Image 1 (cartoon, protein in one colour):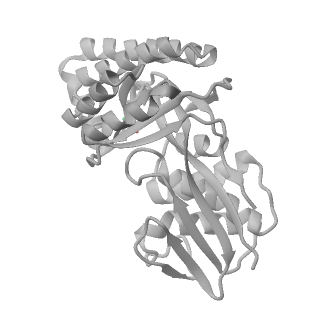
Image 2 (image 1 turned 90 degrees about the horizontal axis):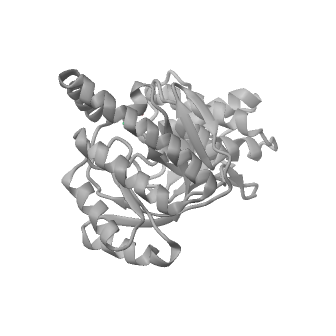
Length: 321
Ligand code: MEV
């Protein structure tokens, strides 16, 4: 039986969340935590299964974007299939299996990684090797149907890998071959990005001059961090990570659990640690020398987080055959 597997990485925001909403720059990176998607034939429908879903979903082959019957759990995958099939003008039933190590709803770009890997697996299943800009664009189209107005960061990182610098919708690849060892700590506390963004907006309305200076400092941190990423100066990067975390704490988007994981990581020898993404729960990460990875992971676990040892990666979407 013909089958093709493709994979794509998760992402984290390293620097600049929240201030990025007001036009300041931010840096995000692909991490070595991947979603694997396998496309194979099916008899007369779309058959969707995932290691992260409790059952197999059979979706009628006749389904379309306007169809309200597609179960929400598999909507992004089904839309990624349809977008790719429309682009290639190839329409056949397919079986899609997702094997993902990326926690869902944790701000790590899980749905973009699955979308990107689905577009790559489906196109290669039909014998077409799409270039990366096209894969990213198709994954973005699928994401837009589901999420409305995503920033385009997640699909870009997941497709191209590496680190990106972004500001006001402009996305620039950071030209660096350095890879950095990280431990991510998941608090498992759910939060809503829009609630935290609104909280920061309210604070900015009460104290505009103070909050704008904090945003501007975060912007400076991002620009310095870009240089240190290229030079590979991890000590300086560690300081920048810590200061960025402190500034996020100061505008009220941390959480007691996030702070505990950050301090646990630092006490165990991390060079820097901060929350990543919207805050209020979700994940933190620590920049760690390779020899300290397991010590820091253990400290995060003891502090009540779920640690994931990983690294930044230059690998974007990959076809595994
Ligand atoms: C959320 O992952 C990052 C925020 O900066 C919001 C955004 O950029 O849309 C908090």
